[in-house]
Image (tube, rainbow, N blue to C red):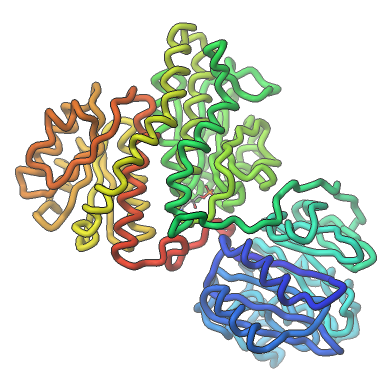
Length: 607
Ligand code: M6R
């Protein structure tokens, strides 16, 4: 999964292409490259690593040309080297690609057998050869692409240029997003509307299987059967300004600190505080008829689903299944009538989740989506969109999207409970009151930042870290471990506290910090017993609890973090803050690249 952009401009485009790539770096940052068609030549500059390396190169050597394509890469086929960086030039053809060509091996063998040579290990170069071969046989660019597209299996968004025609970029998509941007005397292609925001707000989203001939004078779009089609032009409304870090050192830190505000914003669109009611957007189906909920998501979003399972089952008494999206379709899930399929995604583009959503729809299931990017594929495809209002999340580690998703999940759980006749008005009023307390409680949690920073150095020296929780705080333990792993590269695992004695306790010695998430409440004593089993074996515990919990069980801990006293329902939202801060400060102490950790990308658009 990568980011692609193309500009047919009225002046030199290289700088604007790089600006577009900056907005696409969330899709990958293993390498980047730009190519232009200029004076009957294809010009190209590529660089390994972050986009700044490419920008530096372009600063030293100007790349002329009014027509160009560019790419930021998350490596799938071939190491993140300059040779494997896009754009790839094959004869008179130059192209960039996002996705995976699953049948690239037989295609490559076919081309090798004809004596064609390859300069990279990428699947993309195979597509370039196929198109170039058609052109060499006398086909027009249009005919060449038309002949090649049906041969490609997998997922792709492509932007292809031809040395012979500097007024043409051909775009094509299947399973990976691609949009057309309409400008004044200029036209554009991009992975998303965000990349094109400084250039135009007028965006058409290509449908699955569409391909487009983009010229300065106009754009022709064809569907998968090559019929000319119109795709509606919408106004994206996305600001052209690049989001900055404000006074913060990293986007992740900024996003952790934004949580009280964005969670409040999100809650305000689901809570009717005057009426003491929780409300969802209008929907065309009856929530009361839902007999089962199937939740599908990836990574952090999947832990929101796991917390939602506790909430929905406790409040609404409706059975819930939670799957990681990459497993969902392949286990052939039984999706009966009256199942609500719920996807959760920050980006709305995660390929595994999108494929699961399409599978559910194909099975006739009514779908809802808790999604942050309102223009994303998932947001456009779900039957009921439940938006989060986290704003753009730039740090690869998801923080504010997580808590905003939890806020919406709480609202959905309460709505479902009411629709099922299981939530009395007084109880609903109590839930609304607890939810409105979340932003202030998050602020209180943030006030412990300096203490958490102080203890981060101890954790930074560890090789392994365990996180324990019970009930809805068990998925939060999983989230804590994921957060630490992805940005500090320390091995971490989350466990249900009661499960330790069934095996993982063998890992415990004085070198393994154990982070225990234990708000006081019905599960507190049991969690503390499990914590004591760890301490009895020399384990070094960091206990996160409220004043009451710390007074009861804080003695003997390596460190404690005091949270405000909150209702168990909202505890995961509030306790997420110290968990995120701990991972953040450990990563800073280790000197890792917090916002763009190695091997990762913000949006994972390949399966
Ligand atoms: O955009 P999505 O919410 O669908 O992304 C899902 C996961 O890839 C994402 O949450 C990932 O696990 C984060 N890097 C975790 O911090």
